[in-house]
Length: 448
Image 1 (cartoon, rainbow, N blue to C red):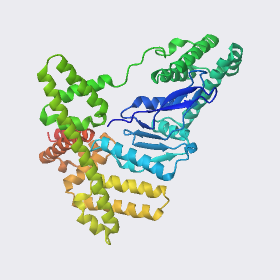
Image 2: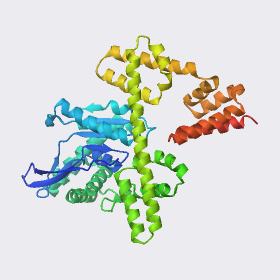
Image 3: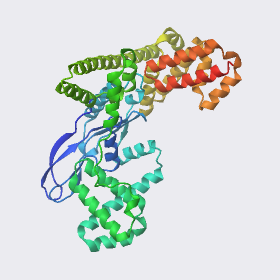
Image 4: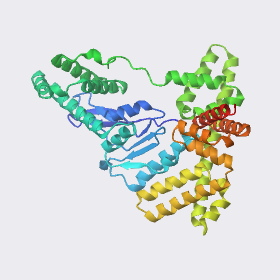
């Protein structure tokens, strides 16, 4: 997926009215541009600094935050935009479609159908931090540090006397965490190209170090140092893998690396082709060109298959909802009760909960229960046992189950585990494949 380029807008400084330009981001996809998350958390996203008087200005813009690893899909529309509901839904719908097409076929997608909406940007940021395992207390402490940085910056602009008075009043709060946060803010400004803002923050930090006697060597590196672009080495390694992979292993590698196969990926690939041509290596250029065409075709097919799966899941769910006998309808459609069906079902449950429709939630929950029951009915004893092993909360719990059921451990059972592992890995579900293979090794060891 090619992430949307930031919009460049022209505005006037709220303090001196001088004209200035700024970049505005409306989509943060952590899987593709993790650095934007840092800007957001540091309060530096969509922030313009006047080149004339140095006044910062926060630009009101709609924002969608997507983190596929944590299944977060968060939306914020600033109230001052007065965006009509239909405009908001169109904006969110376009983003949802784009993100669904970009995710690997095997990746969870149900959460994209039920975005969480926030009235304030702070509440959205709190949700991100909580998903990172950061407590409310830590969030509040960080917010106080940000407010203190703002106070110190204002005092710094008013002169040494004002800054010294502010330091005397808050000296106990000017600790390592404060200076680390201030350094992160300066680094974020540098990365975003706001050199003037970065220089002010660096000068403030140096002055505070002088006034407080803080040991600046505790801070690893410095905001003045150049920051390498994130992901270039990893991208080169992925391109190397895909360029040299045999044809029969290419699709598995594409599925594994699908999140990074976007416009930037193909741009880097094209640069390799051009470099090979410039060096006179026609064979290498032709090989890279042919492999690029293979990757494009495979990605398009995978995305189309994913879209078809979700559309099929939605169709089946609608048919089940309308059927007079739910259990019988589920049995008739048992072959269609798959991961896509459950994702669509869960997304509809979340939407019903948000709408306060208790009857719909109850109905969908009953469909989910019956669907699992229907699938359970069709399983062989061996398949039921494998499901139990996979549902174990801890690896040691699965090992305990294996030891408690020696009659189930046969050569055919171990072979089946390995076959399922191969299947999962070929579908791009590597973690599940590895788990099945580990179970196969444990079961195999018990045969001797």
